[in-house]
Image (cartoon, rainbow, N blue to C red; front, side, top):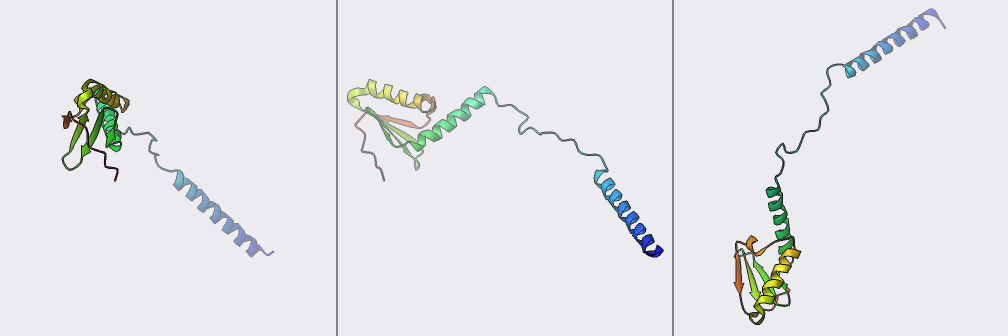
Length: 131
């Protein structure tokens, strides 16, 4: 190999090394932003808010079960009127009310007081439309 070829090879090696050093320095330069996790919400949820949220979920689950017919009561919901209709067997009012309360408790701990739009009718409920 001639001196010129060795010189050219040496010069290209030096240029390559300088370029690599420059790239590495460029990538590692400057302050790096600190890695911190940002909280989703700075305000913690209170127990009352959590309770309301849980009741909302329970109410949604309840709507998915309607219309419902128990032994002594039936519960319907009208989306058009935004109201619940509770039919309680008139010959078994106490048992119907108790069964309804137990139904609510078993479906997310709801109570009769939770409903703003509940109509209670003491008569034999109509047949449930399954269509």
